[in-house]
Image 1: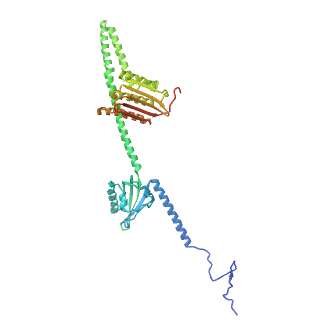
Image 2: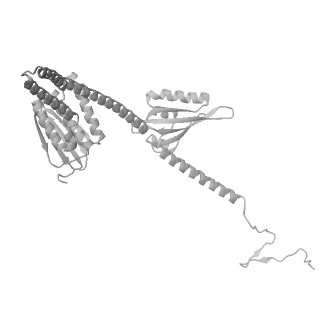
Length: 400
């Protein structure tokens, strides 16, 4: 008889087969699956970090690099290649290649700084010029730090390099603009001083002398009245004429400094009046052409145009030798244009005269620049000069 102790019937599977009851049935899988998931998550984080770093480098216009001192291997980030004009990993990186890209005047200084960093273990920075793939020169700023072992040995140098070419150009432009502004300011001061001296001279030589003569005439008149002589009417007539001369001369100076007509009637009547007076005083035949499209403009625009006409005519009278002058005032689409033309010797003036002419031209340039306009001067030796200023402004039709 067979004992039943310890015996068990084979169990049937759902598909009709049998399952060996001695083989254990797994209920879950652990360990390897969790490690694989952790590694995958870690790779995703690294990839995301590298992507963010690459984007940051592009936004900052910089690249990162590493130099392994033991193996000599040099590693550039993708954007480091792009800054130098190369595609990522387009060229083999060696110390000689990287050093050869540096401008010859900056190469030794760059080597010295890296050698100091290796010897001292301290960080540093350096600004240098370097050639890129197309042969053009760019300006870079690099910052670097040594990576030091526990024993104090420098293992490698890591750093970032940023393209600062545009920043340097902007600084140079600002410096040039500031230099030009200082020069123009000095020219303006010189012009103002010259104007003051001229006004003082004219007041002394014209109105001052006339008023001095008037004072003497009034003294003679006082004596004649006291003595009751027949000279009283003559002295009165002379005093009246001298007073009228002084009034006229002071009025002319006032008009030259800032004609009241400009405020009251506008640009066209003032230029027409000034051209007529200039022609009478200088003997230079002066014509004024006006297209009739402009009525009133802001006072600053009208004053600028009047001063340009005034300065240009003064230069024609003093330096050109021309017997004619033409002034044209035209309203263009969105701007006003004034042009002064002569038929003189051109701007090929003697050296002692060039500085005086230059101050006036600098003043005209500065006035037009402040109104965001442009000043053009065309001159041919022996054939004359054309001064043209175009100032942006909304053209106003006459009668509007």
